[in-house]
Image 1 (tube, rainbow, N blue to C red):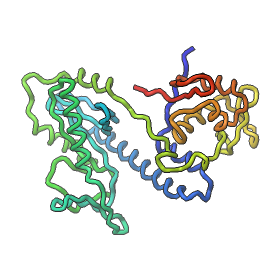
Image 2 (cartoon, helix red, strand yellow; image 1 turned 90 degrees about the horizontal axis):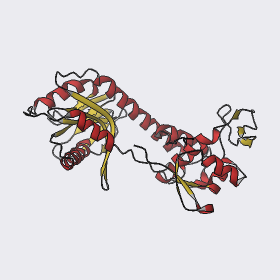
Image 3 (cartoon, rainbow, N blue to C red; image 1 turned 135 degrees about the vertical axis):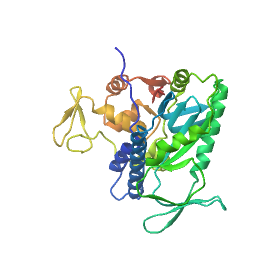
Image 4 (cartoon, rainbow, N blue to C red; image 1 turned 30 degrees about the horizontal axis):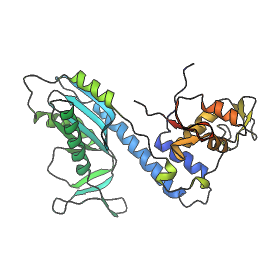
Length: 319
């Protein structure tokens, strides 16, 4: 029988479940709530970018890919969007930065003033875009793909105002994106032998390599011993479901769920560690029997290493 695959929780959800497993007085709860809101806003911004892309139209052939991750050795990049045309490839970089935006050409600083008129100095998004352009140009050269690379930074919040901006056609608001993409394309002539875009698209999809995120406890410097253990009931949200007759039952509300350990495993890999042992699984889920834990773990298509009691289970890297 084919084993079931597991993957990580999305970052927004994972942070929410991390907050739920922390004590109410934990000092990181407020900061994590802010992180969750920021990530949620970024996701909404990327959704706005994708929705506005339907307004892009060209009589020439084009293809679009979303959320593309590539690597060359230890060098890895992630692109929110990638437009492939016969003239060039355009990296689309979504930025969820609101407020009054300033690009200072004299000092090279990038900053914004928020609603309270507080100045926030930030990383210049042009630097990251230029790195990604350099990477993709090198990646194309390695694959013998003759296609120039450009890029566009797209500010997605509705409450975004450019106060000082560079004289560039490579920075815009989300509603301006279709027109700016067309302007960039005009700067690149059509070659006599245009590239075969379906083949390039296939190569990119084949090479797409989503990375395994660092578990959130490591990212936010939270000790695993600070995290509440046990399987959470989806009905009453209490922790501590019990393994009874090949199912899980909540001692508080009586709700039963045969697959409750599946979500708990996804939580563990998202929050605690990149691998889990039989003992760690038993401690996390509240299972006493080693053989039961082994049977539950081997239901899933996980990487294994080590033997017997030292065996470790890890998520497989997905294409």
